[in-house]
Structure formats: C-alpha cells, structure tokens
Amino acid sequence: MAAGPLVSIDPRDRTPIYAQLERGLRAAIATARLHAGDQLPTVRQLAVDLQINANTVARVYAELERAGVIETRRGIGSFVTATPQQAQPPDQHRRQLRAFVTRVIGDAAAAGFTIDDVAAELRAHRQKGA
Image (spheres, rainbow, N blue to C red):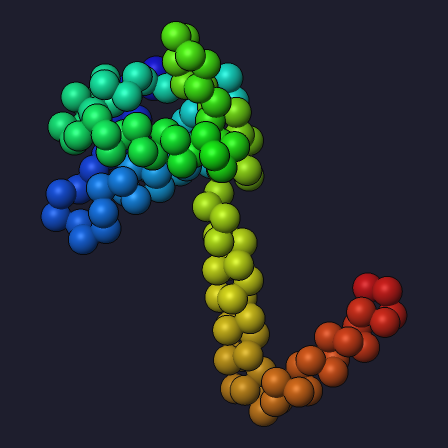
C-alpha cells in the first residue's frame, strides 16, 4: 500500500463517517493512488486504522461493490475494479455540468445575452455539426 493513510476521517466534519469513507476511497481510485487490481485493507484492518466501527467499513465496501467500484472475493479480500473515471461519484458529472452551465449563463448575462439567446446559438452550432 502507498505511504501514508489510504483515506482519512475527520470526526469534526458534519459529513457522516460512511460518506467520508466512500468519498475517500473513490478519490483514492480517481487520483490513481489505488489502481484496478489493488487489494484494499480488510474491513477489520481499515476500521482499526481509522478508529471507526467495522460495520461502517463493511457498509461502504458493500456499497462500492454494488456500484462496481470494488470486487470482494470470499476468503481472499476486496480489490479495486474501477478505473479512475468509473470511480467518480455518480452525480459528479451532473454537478460539473451544472457548474459549467451556471458559469455560461452568468457570462452570457454579463454580456447582455439571455438564456434563450444562448440556447438558440447552441442549437445552431449543433446543426452545423460542430
């Protein structure tokens, strides 16, 4: 395993511990600190390392397995199966698009364009095959 902790949990953070852990594991894969095929610590070991309940770790591992991010092989362990792109939280793409659209609308308004102006130009751009 890489030097330093795989993920960290901040007890002062209002985000639930399981959400911090899931976000941390997804981030470790998305930033290539963990790669497809890498073995994760056991539920018990990660719980001890992070000083959290093993049930919380088991819940996160189960959720990541349902999402196709990891695979658990009975008696062997849990392994990363996702690519960095696949490890992104499901709503990440939508949040990025929403932020982009918000910036475009703000820039358009500052330049004196309406949303309808922008939408019409996008449609025209699309029809040109660009």
